[in-house]
Image (cartoon, rainbow, N blue to C red; front, side):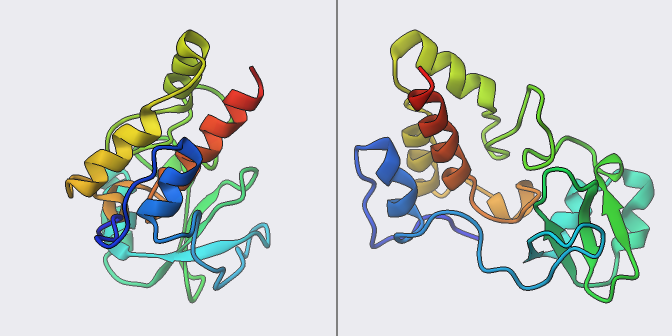
Length: 171
């Protein structure tokens, strides 16, 4: 997956960075299924992503199947197999999922390691953050691997921009 659409340029404004990188859209793709556990929104995710997120002792359980990511914060289910025969929860993963945790560090960017505390601290110090622009530049250079590294299987820049706006408005 390449987050950067070559025909788009990155705007200077932090609120426009994600739209430029993502071809005018921010956030996840349309919902395809609802989580069996909570009924929350979900989206397809590659089996590769699931396998890369799971603890080693669970890898064999995900060798086959088509998976979906549940984004509901209060639901412990992260991935479920489309036929709903296999379910993986937060406890089954090697690390935290930003959409599922509410205490720091809350991951935002899995490719380059930024979390909410990085954005919050920079805004506190400078009144603004350059983190979205930094990520956008690295994306343009082809250095991201969101499809594999982000548990949701999509580009993080929309979530990074949302966090930056939320913290900027809160100051």
